[in-house]
Image (cartoon, rainbow, N blue to C red):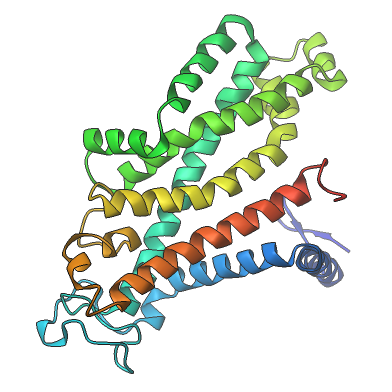
Length: 302
């Protein structure tokens, strides 16, 4: 049984904790059985997160330290994935690059999806002129290719991880806004939303407590699908020299610059960053598709 703590919260007893753990395990097991590819993608994402968090424990070299004596050393026991044209350990840089990709990916998705979701709810709730103004602005942003828009923003703001998050996040606002708006338009006419309006509830209360919670499922689908796109966009910006500023490790940055002159004699310099980008994007796409199938009522029984 749950017992009241000395404060205001509840402390779960041992039986409740076991019950919650069993329910979580059942949900995870069911997801693995129903969506094995999505579970594989989730496992790769989990490995990336563990690598990023445990980087000081699983790396043995400074990712920024040059060593011309060990320039372009092939994979060995001392350098598991070899070294680059400056003698920097590739395993360490790949692990540190995972941290950069996760920060940019989740940060850009959080910024773009939250901003887009809120504007979508406001647009649907007020309608009329407000809806027209917001949606025409979204049309203008959608008319610009994602990478071109991100390049223009980075050229204006300068190179930094924060600016990369902003640049990629802005390009994701219209998609989230459109999806959440379509859901909010139907929820706006529901009985509980109309009832709250009839008793004098404020617009903010209706949007936050009655409309927005009903838009969480499609919002999560859009956000999960956007993660892979954000990572590939960050790699593209870094490859073009307008992403994460050097010498910070970035998977896209490892494929650009003078490194391209050494691919013939040191192929691992192209293989490992390219493989890391491919696995990350593939994993997020698999997990996003599986999450969509689970959360979307129209696909739940398929």
